[in-house]
Length: 354
Image (cartoon, rainbow, N blue to C red; front, side):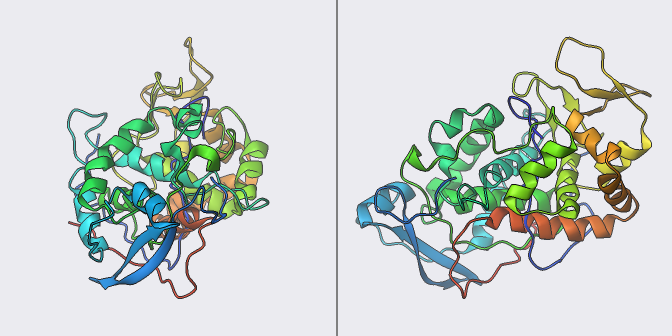
């Protein structure tokens, strides 16, 4: 989860939800694009094998060689069914790092899931999380994805330990893990995404929100994905997590004072603080008048200035449970945009580790 030329985007991994299962009590959190074509040249296709621990296991083949090269499994390997709760726990185990940002990789993993999924265009049925096309140029070098090599690198040991999982499933699952482990709602998730085998499936640049723009741009971007105004506002709430970086987006600072805790505080800060334009040499952004420690982007201010967005933001500022429920549904939806799941595929609810 808003973007300028790099990384200040909506990090909602946003967000597509299925069943509105939610929880509003933080757990151990720290304060502070492809085409969906299945041609043999560009895609590895999923085959459901079985279940383990309540989760499906998949191998990927197009012809077999293409699939195995995408999964990191040698042709002679015997693949065991995946226990997705086990994979979830492994991702949760790498979140904390006192030497990175505010002490957690969680926010950047949400952003990875968001950016991998938010390129979907319903009019062409292209983009989205299916394919994990950010592994390839030109998408890996898109300005909006600056800094996301960190997130992809963090997940590489997990991929090596569980070679059966596709990158597309791993990245989206990591977003779910981060949301839940940082105190957010339970987010329904299911496996079944394929990995593209070349950069020919990369979506064009410019499909993610531009943080410098206002409400018209935001609606144009999100409507193309298939979201309505209420879902757009819910996804924006992921800005409770993380911060902007001058060396990525050009912007600087956190939205809240607890950037590793998922909460409705983004909406509280947006509506309760007095905001003024920051006087500095960087791009236009806003600082809270009281301390100057917090920031909002021009795109964030659209949720204050637009009446429909404002009224929904007000609801979420006053009702954390409502926000959690709506965010869970929208984030789950985001992660599934454009993915051709089997008809009998059902979402999983994976358990937080704490």
